[in-house]
Image (cartoon, rainbow, N blue to C red; front, side, top):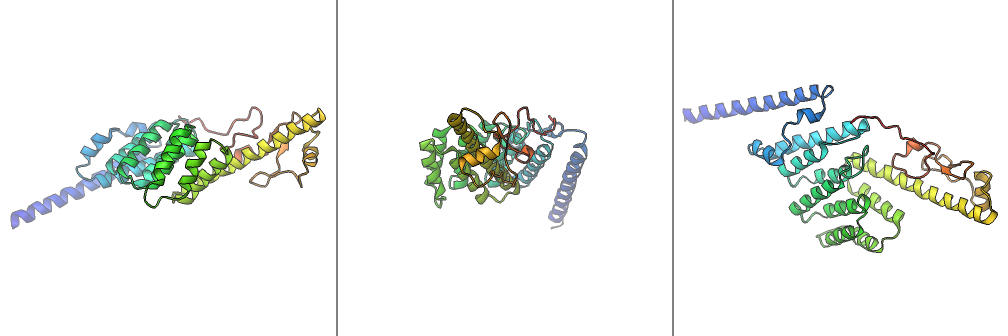
Length: 305
């Protein structure tokens, strides 16, 4: 009995010391971060090696790597980083340690695929991550939605997007909008409408604040792009009828029979240049807008690598 008790005490002491050492290492890592990037303090990038080194504490290590992934993305996104080299490895390690951590796949699909500074610009790795998620969680319809989303929004691969959404419709309790998306992909039509539906669905089905805000920003940008397209078409129609450009936006509004100058999502009226270009008054407020940007405009992104 005494021997067993002594072994138990020794094991408990070693566990406490190990946890304390882990906390100390993480604390030192955090202190290093202002002077060194995470690239310099992440020594093991292989999911297999990390899993072996976890000594059975896969869940605990998955939480640690998941926290690191969120911190890494948040820090670099805040400073408009030009690269996110470690985001994919961090997410891959996290999901290999815990293949059922659904939020890691959702987070990964939203921030791995978009181009910097909004993401890592690695849609292929986002696809691989989502396929791994589906392989390990075949009855989770959210994963089919996320994979189809990457195919459509980032890779413009309508065929694979359609097939993925269609597979998702066969999952028990799948949301009905997957059928609608599958049909939309098959038609290759309604670009703005489909994108708006996808981002609205993302907003409604996630609990992650960053992903919700990302969806809101994209929805705002979609409205801007659509507004500018419509107004630019109105300028073209005016020129075809009169053989000249509108003298100002008020003349354009009058010719189109509009009640007033259309407003952007922040309530600011769009403007028209002497060359007939429709522009935003505050383009910095719409980081994902692709239309209505002044000639030569550059977003106020930092230069962090």
